[in-house]
Amino acid sequence: MKFSCPNCKSKIEIQKTFNKKMHVSCSSCGIEDLLEFSKNYDEVFLEFLSRFDDGLVTKNGISENLKEEGIVRDENEIKKMIGENHPDSITETILFSKKDYISQYKILKHPEPKMGCKVSEMGLDDGITKYLKKSNINQFYKFQEEAINEIIFGENVIIEAPTASGKTEAFVIPVIQKIQNTAESGNVFAVFVYPTKALARDQYPKIQNLAEKIGVTVNVFDGDTNQTERRDILENPPHILVTNFDVIHYHLWHQTKFSSLLNTVKILVVDEAHVYSGIFGSNVHYIIKRLKRICSSKIQFIAASATLEDAKEFCEKLFDAKMKIIHGSGKKGQTDFVMLFPSLRTQRSLMVDLTKKLTEKNHKTMVFSNSHLNSELLAIQAKKQKVNIKVHRAGLMANYRKSVEKEFKGDLLQAISCTPTLELGIDVGNVDGVISSTIPVNRLIQRIGRAAR
Ligand SMILES: [Zn+2]
Image (cartoon, rainbow, N blue to C red; front, top):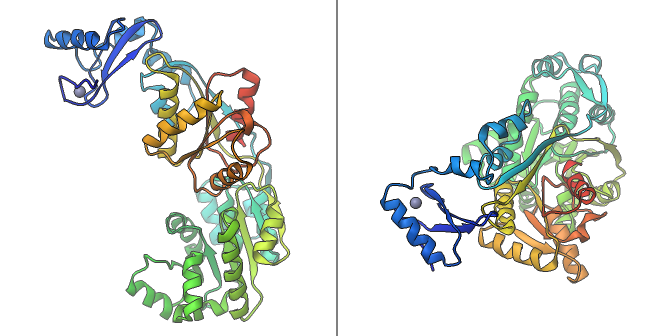
């Protein structure tokens, strides 16, 4: 039976609360009410309608009531829990949703990455140094210092570091410094490859900001580059081209004018290199081989990657070259930890809702349930909400589980619904969010550890 809202005609939700009352609400217009318990939902709905007619139901009119009953917390109480901290915006919506009782909110701070030398001691061009100082960067991380030195020296380098750890600066700075030292204008000196157009366009301003400070030119060349821009690039090649492997492959194959721009390439940067596994990876391997063949001089390779167990072996195969690996430790930032008690809905609907909230904002999420059945049911309900999720649990075929791990690691899957089999040691790459049903604390810490590393 579907109940429709007397105010806006949307669907009315009726939920049993933890203290045996009935919560009636409309998620569209926000009216809600708290009624006495009854097994008969029709009865509850009729009671709700008559209260609505009597003007006793108003928008968020019962929040006071919910607070008194201990069903949700007072906003001021939540603000006190947050204190001086700055929760992520997703965390903030969860904390103030008034859909659940907030049992606890905490911030887990990550250890700061190891620091390296001062920016001014690096011997970089004044333009770069000044720009970094202006952006409040006075000191490099150790891994950035190492990467800058090795790249300027000419080594093939893999920079393995978590997302948002300063990876991009670690390769952009030495590349533009090299360009300034040695490059002639009118030739493409470096090609930066990203797995998708969106990612390339996302990183482009960051690269350009640094490069333009010392007169190094950058352009994006991909499927969205229009005719005029293409002509400009061909007539006036930039020092750095930002593109993807599909574009490179197409032009090399058809030997277009654009492909002749690639003859002068001295550095190939492949960001997010961990995505090039499987068939995709072997295609890329051959594209790189072709590129090597048409280039007049030896190419220096730089790969940047999220944490990979076998990054060195992986990249040496991909580039068919000896590589030096540099590890960026730690992630700058924090993990928000929220403990919720589903006082107005079932645990599963809370977990599905959280999964949706996180994946909508592109957070790769692991959802832990305590039984095989629950992990399956959660995935079914999340899929109905258009979440890109798959189940990973014991009892499934080993090669299926492997494929799920791989898709997740390669960013082809937003979420996995799993049982405790995934707690230990399985490498699924970077994780942004962990949702877990109630479990003993020591195991919870292990799960949280995944998001924190
Ligand atoms: Zn309504």
